[in-house]
Image (cartoon, rainbow, N blue to C red; front, side, top):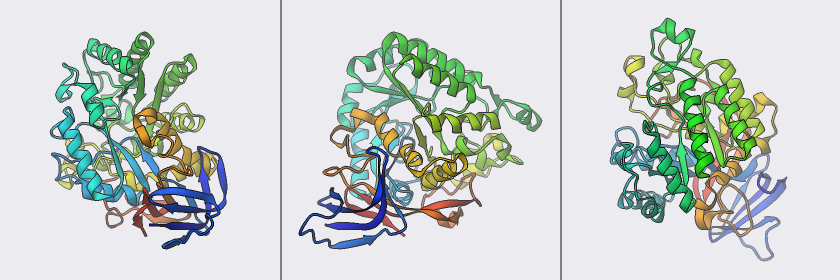
Length: 430
């Protein structure tokens, strides 16, 4: 199918392009940016005047809940939510049921996702068998099945020797290990340690739970030279340690969730379970440091941390409620809000949800490297038409995800996703 997107403000952070232009698409690829080739006869024209034409968004943290947790979300609902949020490529953690620790499970997930012709699913394989922290998985086989890296998801590793061996092995084959820094024993609380958690009688997670884990990871990276991606940093101290590690030249990247970027522990209100999240929401100084770290590049990417949760699992006392929130449909709006609050241009905002997360994935993208997260002639046509004007209310009825719980419920957010194309196929339009 030939598609022509006309008169939009085309922004591609990867190339520095920012101009009013047309984008011509044929056979699932971009054939021209600027002016359509001679004789190009589109079967469909999309008028993007007054709107932004950008690369499809890349989300490095999105749980799809399938297999095994279909009561909270299914591939159909969550991938529909992805394209409604402009997300054309997403990374899903391995903590499904069963865990993604065998090639057959990975292949089944990818096959099911591909049949839906919605967002592209890039699975992470389990770092250890069953995420139990004892025996390393067969990373080579999982990579061949389509895994882009290896992770423990939210299961902290207590055995440092296992982490060391995992990084040694990963370094030998140039795999990336994805770790959320959390010390095994200190990270078991439900709220950020501090005066508010104490008054509310909630068990706390100190900043040291993150910084101790970061120190350990950095020491092991120094000795193994393994590439590590640090997931969902939550504290000012954590940002500073990553800044120092990057200045030293360690091969590490990092991301932050939309929740930690905008919210603080006071958003728990009167035990509002919608704010029961992992990582826990911290104080304002931490949020401000996360915003600054994302702006200056210390933190590479902004992620939705999409975790749909069944309504019954949220209708419990705060400490017993299941952590998580729906987020993919909010990624562009909350990125834009951060940019507006921080005085950043739209290209910088877009880079944190397109170019930079694609760079984190790097060679793991295989033949898609150079196409995902950017607009390139000859590249795969993952394209979004975005509005940066107006506001829309976040309500249950406005979300396509099966999970309706979000701490941003009731917010008026800026910007909307108007059209999403995945490999030249119109996967969503308003």
